[in-house]
Each structure stands twice: as C-alpha cells, then as structure tokens.
Length: 297
Image (cartoon, rainbow, N blue to C red; front, side, top):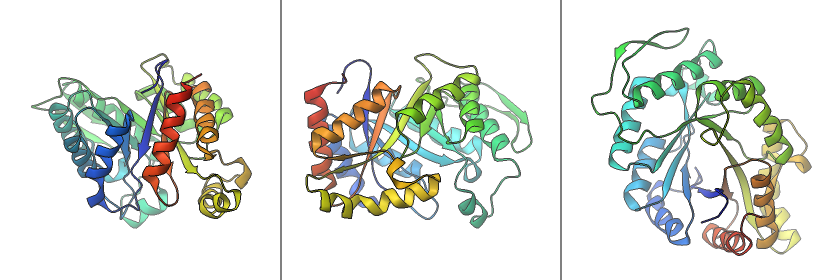
C-alpha cells in the first residue's frame, strides 16, 4: 500500500468476537492494508486458529501472529503449526513469539524458570525446524532430540520476537528475524530498541521492526479523550510511564496518519494499528486513506 518499503497493518483486537474475523480480514484486504495481525492472550482466542482463518478468508493479505507466548507453545508443535500454514499460504505469514505475561503464565501453570532462556531456545528451535534442519537442543528450558519436520515450508516465514525490555530486545537481535514492539512506544523508544537489537549482532533489511500503535480517529477532543483515554491510562500503568508519554495515533485522520509516519521515520518497517472505540472499520478506512494520500514522507 505504501512506498519506501514501509507497511501498515491492522490488529484484530482480542475483545472482538472470533466469528467476525473472516469478514474483517476481507475488509482489510479490500482497503489495501498490507497486514492483519491476530492476538494470543490467555483466555482469548488462539493465534494459530485465528491466523489460519484470516489466511483462508483472503488472497494476498499477510497475516502476523502477535504473539504466541513461548511458555504455552512447545517449539516442535509450534513449528509444525507454522509450517503447515506456510505451506498452504506461502509468503503470507509472520510468526511472533514472546515471553507471555508472567501472571498469565503462572495462572496456566507454565511459568518458566528463565523466561529469557526459554524464548531464546524456542525461537532458535522453531527457526531451525522451519528451515528443514534436524534440531537437537538440551537447554535450560527446551529439550529436543533430533526433531525434523517432514513438510518444512518452501517459503520460510520470519519468526520475530515480541519483546519490550533491553535484554529481550538484544535477544531478538541475536536469534530472531526481527522484533515486535508493543503499543504505546514512540519514535524515541524505537531508536533505543534498534540500539539494543544491534547489540545482538543481526541488523539490516531482513531484520524487521514491527510496532503496534493505538488508533482512534475522532475530531471532537472530548469524545476522543472519553474513547481512548482509559486505554492509554491502562497501558501507561503497564509500561510504567505517565499517560502523556503513551504514544498513539489519534485525532482527525490526517493527524493520526502523521503519527504513523513518525514511527516509520524512526525506523519502524511495519506499523500495526489497534483501533479503539466504535466503528473500527470507519477509523481504519479514514487512517488508511490519509496514509495513502500522504505517502510515507
């Protein structure tokens, strides 16, 4: 949809009913959006089923998994699932893997002793399996003994790490194909994230940076605050920063588009919009229209 190699995606919010996903995916493809990202949070919908549904409902849309928690996903099984999707829909899948929210992993009885070790070992194993390699790992958290996929993908999907903190970003730069940065992070955060990723040793065009961003297209300031304010406040508490420092693409469509362009200019390869409030299709259509009119510059 955009030039200069920049992409725009849209998140299918976890609170939206799963049965609405096929129509939403088709609507996004009709708008010319590059990506649709599905979510995997404990007690909401599973990401593999959601990704398969979105891929089957569309013809060209790239579908991202954002993110599969490593503690919930045995790496051999995760690679099997991703390989099947990549074989059926070549070149249209990006797989995000992350630590998972600690409280949720405890609730599910899968909290690892070392989240960093688990994520690194999981990403390493999954990427090797997707490349068709025989993988053996005797790690702190992952043990595989000579596992090889019978049907590895012909087009290997990128495996990116959904991470926030410096050591995890460095891990993404070391073992993953890129990183996913959560909502609320602005241009200065992206510059710092790139720096941490570069410490991991892998840089360049093949090492992507995807950023999620809240979207609320609303011209009335009072309605805008009432709609998006609670989401930004809650996210600020999670990030440990005041609400005024929580980055979001909000306001009239051209203002929201300008905020997306700020993220592109700061190094984001893909910006994924998470619509907040009523009429998400209208909001996305308005923002995408403004982005298309203004390009990436």
